[in-house]
Image: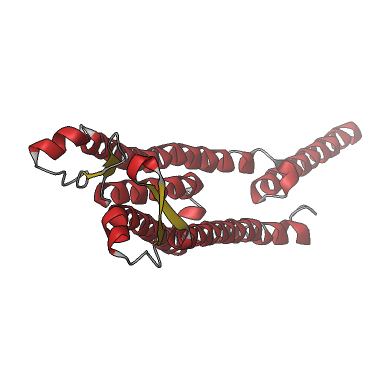
Length: 258
């Protein structure tokens, strides 16, 4: 047995090596958790701003008309007539931001551990995907309000359920159809973004795993078991060669004496 095999470093190094990836993985997971929580907090603040900010809409001759806020709308009859659709839109936007914040928080808590270490690109892609999803759904459900030449308000329904009256439909044009097409495009784009992140992240993960296997057999300085075994075999071979040489020398000495 060579001295290298008996070294305590050769025995201790392979056991201590797996500790480093575990520490780095925990750091990555914690980073994703904090990032998703921070985004959820920002969305909550944005929802509060939309809920509390004063609402002004164009009235007759496009003069601004105060409607209060989504939290406390104006209560007189004229305000209810002028501000009804606008207040509803702001309330829908605030609700959509709250839903987005909840989705970001839940997805971050549930997927940070299984995907944060293996598919980090997917985790980053989920943030804009969730934003696009909630924005598209909100636009599909919010009422559409347009204004005529004199500032008169024209209600066009929603992108999913536009008005059917021929006169009002003529004044609304193709606004509902345009918003509906945009919303469905954003939904498809959000799903495609997550799918591409899975595709690209899978290639990166496979490449890292492949690269992690190659250096293990090619780095004798790392103190791996393979390199130590090779050294032991070389020492044994040199010892055998020395024994053979000594036997040959003894045979020649015996022949000379005879």
